[in-house]
Image 1 (cartoon, rainbow, N blue to C red):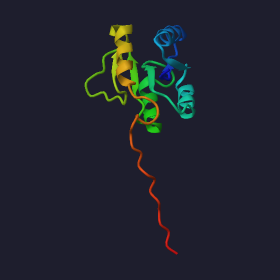
Image 2 (image 1 turned 30 degrees about the horizontal axis):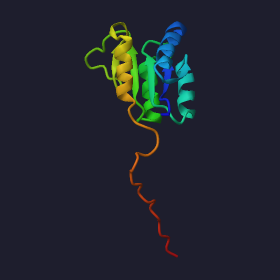
Image 3 (image 1 turned 90 degrees about the vertical axis):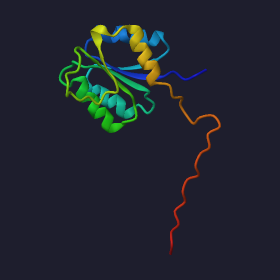
Image 4 (image 1 turned 60 degrees about the horizontal axis):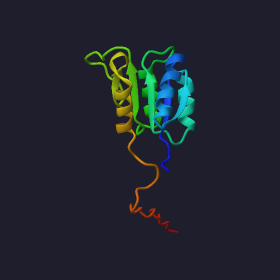
Length: 140
């Protein structure tokens, strides 16, 4: 059995959080949830195997774009999706991998994006050769 992909879901609206969590769990994902940015940072810092972060853009006191910026400094390789209330304005820079507009993004589109962004398997690829660790020589 394949291990479930782990998603950190961040949303300060508890109704939206529970609906999105239900959608993800019923499609085979394991979900860790956070209501605030600080809670998300604590979970992200301690959870070793996260496959994706999904956060709402408008939250208080830390919005989703700021949260993603902080999380990317901790682990830049983890894909992160920002669900925004509006289209990004020209010149606006987000560290999110995609920015999706909540109102126009269907559940199927969101699931499709998540599936594309979490294709990697845990552990080494079958048949992959591992490089031998370098031995440092100490001269005396």
